[in-house]
Length: 217
Image 1 (spheres, helix red, strand yellow):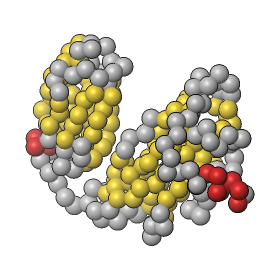
Image 2 (cartoon, helix red, strand yellow):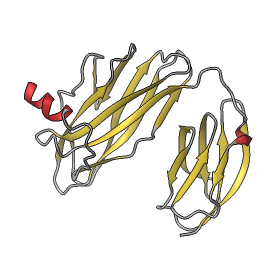
Image 3 (cartoon, rainbow, N blue to C red):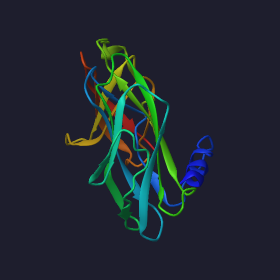
Image 4 (tube, rainbow, N blue to C red):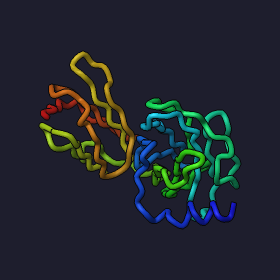
C-alpha cells in the first residue's frame, strides 16, 4: 500500500491523459452557506475492453467534512481510495460518482482532486480538480454578465461576477445544454449543429431575458 501511495501521489503534479477513461466535470460546484455542496459527473470507458475502475481523492488538510460515493458505496471522510471497483463496459459511461462537502462555510472555496483509473493501471488515469464553493450572501445583477462571441464556433465564454446557471434551448424550446458555474467560464459547444438557439442566464437574485445565440461551425 505504501508503494501504491507513493506511486499515485508522487505524480499528481504531472499532467497525464488517460488512454482508457474520460470525464466531463465542471470546474466549479456551488451551494449556499451551510448546505451540502455536491459534484456529480460521468466517467466514460473509451477503451475497447471492460474496465474495473477505482477512484482516489487528493486534497489539502481542510477543516471540513468531505466524502465521496462511487457506485452504491459511499466512503467515510477518512477514506481516500475506493476499495470496491466499478466495472464500466467498453464504450459505455457510468454516472455513479459524486463528491460532497458538508456544511460549506460562507464565502469559501475548497479544491479537491479526484482521479479515476483501471484498478491494475494507476498511471492510466484521468483526474479532475474540482472547486467546491459557497454562494454566501453576496448577490449580483446578472445583466452585468457577458456571453460571447455571438455568432460562436466551438467555445462560448461567460464572464460573471458570481454563481450562475446557463441554459441553452433549441428552436422548439427544449433545453439542450445546461451548466452551473462561477465567474469566467468556457463552454464547449462544438458538438451542436450550426443554427439558431436561445439561452438564459440566471443568478440567485436575477434573471437575464432570453437571448438569441447563433452557432456557426
